[in-house]
Amino acid sequence: MIKSKLKKGLEHSSKYPEDVFRGNHASVWGSWWNEELGWGYKCCHIVDRQNHYCLGDRGKKIALLKEVIYFITV
Ligand SMILES: [Zn+2]
Image 1: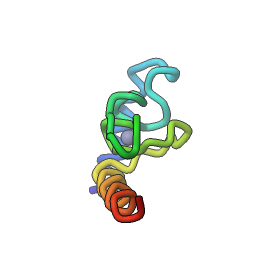
Image 2: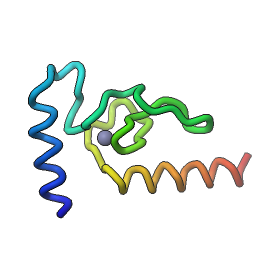
Image 3: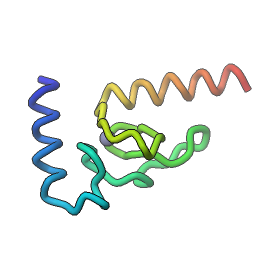
């Protein structure tokens, strides 16, 4: 299931210039904003611009955890 998602992401990204869609992300960096984490990818909520590996929903869960960690440590 993850593999098919990944394949879909790659196919999607190949339709666009590499400088716009980096790696296998389905959206551009800066398409998602979080008050605690800052700018990120809308497709996976990864805030590291240099991270070209899209995690999809798993990334969103990680972002949520990061937000919780930020919330309890600040
Ligand atoms: Zn992504």
